[in-house]
Length: 287
Image: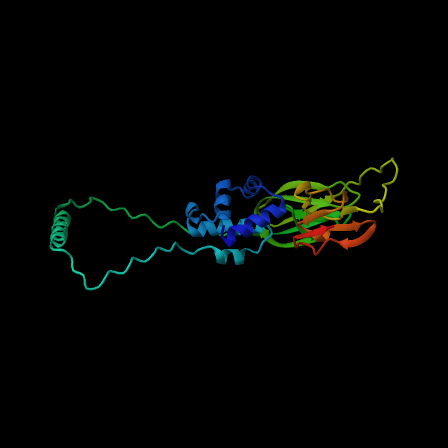
């Protein structure tokens, strides 16, 4: 697999997306994304359109599209013909056959009927670059975390830079309030405002703190992040937990996170802080 396809596949798996889910969000065929990840460029449409698909796929996966576009071949390269050996003459029989073939083709060109009409089709126009529109999101109360197609944009009140238009999924999350998720049509500049509904108070006992017993690892999810926890090759957990969830595991384990800055680590009752930096996928082992 080439470097371009490996980057795309790794970023998609870290987001917890399947090829079918990614193709559905981009309104593309699964075969297009499979060809990009497998570097089967001959199965893609013309380079200009295929590069547009590559740009949209990179943005969906949270990647900078420019380095990936530089890896996409500009045009197919055909191999050079082997050099003709010097000093060798054609056999007389082959020379005579080529001469007769040339004479026959010349006679065909002279005697063939000329076409009654020649229609020249105009060249197909290059694909139009996707339109981009600004997005404003406000909430009451403010401070809600805003996600677009699963990517974190910031907190309300939010004024995002121009984003690629189309059908997008917007989600707002604020601790103590019901999350809001809806599909929006970003075909013009949008200014959205939401009134968040507070969650009912839990009449039961207050949540218990994670036990400080030895041999335990507790992961507190403070933001949206994909997680995978394994032990000796056995997968103990994989998915995107709800914000505010606490996951406890017996040691030893290995933790993989797509957004380590949103996951707080408590090892044997000791708070070690975030798993890593926000937005930089990381794998850590806890023996």
